[in-house]
Amino acid sequence: MHHGINPHIQQHITALPQEEHLRLKALGDTDPAGLLQVSDDVDPDSIEGSELTYLQGVAVSRGTPAPDDLDAIEVPAGTWAVFRTAGPYPHAPQTAWAATATATEWFPANPWRLRQGPSIVAILARADDFSTATCELWLPVEPI
Image (cartoon, rainbow, N blue to C red; front, side, top):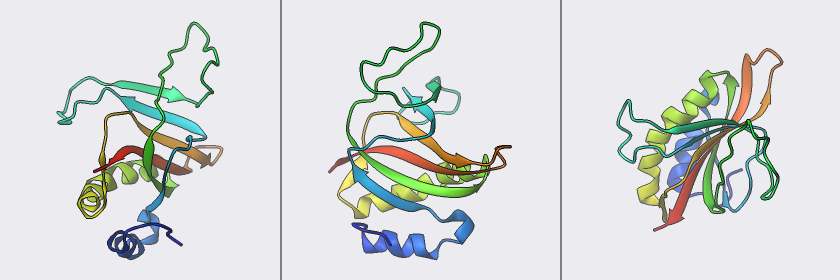
């Protein structure tokens, strides 16, 4: 069931093959869980070869000290469009990333646009050998 989703988006999601099924999960101020892959300082024009900040880790509460030999990034509270996918890893999150091109077609039909901030891939569950995974792609959004 898809609560609070534009009917155009819901029809598009339902029409996707099961292995590429993405779901707009939520728009709200929540925290991602699981293993995180965070991309920040991305060139707004997405120019290939441009530098960015890429970190892997977990979310911790503000004020939780990070060991000196680890990097930390503060992610301000905000609203996020969250897309979930499951299947072969790393194909599942790559499919979610590729589908964001389609998601950009969805934004004009909704009162949201991408905003500055990191994008996050959260790995919620995975096989022991990492052959399959359930992932969420978190994109920062703001009202138009």
